[in-house]
Image (cartoon, rainbow, N blue to C red; front, side):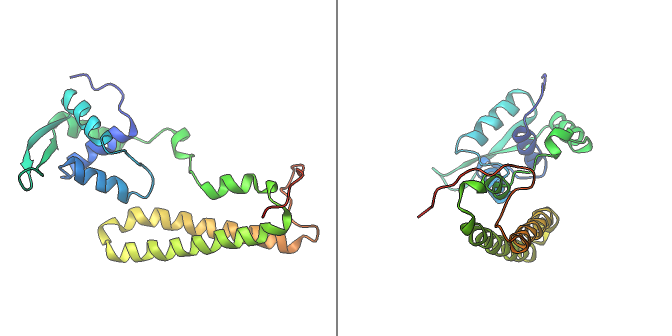
Length: 193
């Protein structure tokens, strides 16, 4: 049965099967609800289920749904449950934990490519979009109490991002010569349209 090293997506799909999420379709919907952590293409969930089945970690338990729209259902095997429990009981490597992908942080890193007079407007736009995200997350936590603690993580990250954006805006306000990244030389910029 050799399980070998599973990918994060394989562990997640195996954990879904262990938690009663049975069909590939339902698993894909669950992944979509994880807000960008995974973005599997249509067939990837089924490829993972096939690999997990070949390793003896999930098994097909039947079909459900209307004729011609039937969905194959799966459950974790005893070996699969053991793998999930070991995965959940272990800490991920620090190299994975310290990676928090934030597209705004990436864009901020290169903001010098935009003329200084546009920085405040851009940061305000990011701040407003972040506030909309906080409202959406708050509503989702109320609507889906079972997902509250998972969504709370995203909420707290968005809240921290909001504070960071405010600090950047305060820094622009405090400087008379515009906006400069501390300790980095400025690059010449061209006017944007």
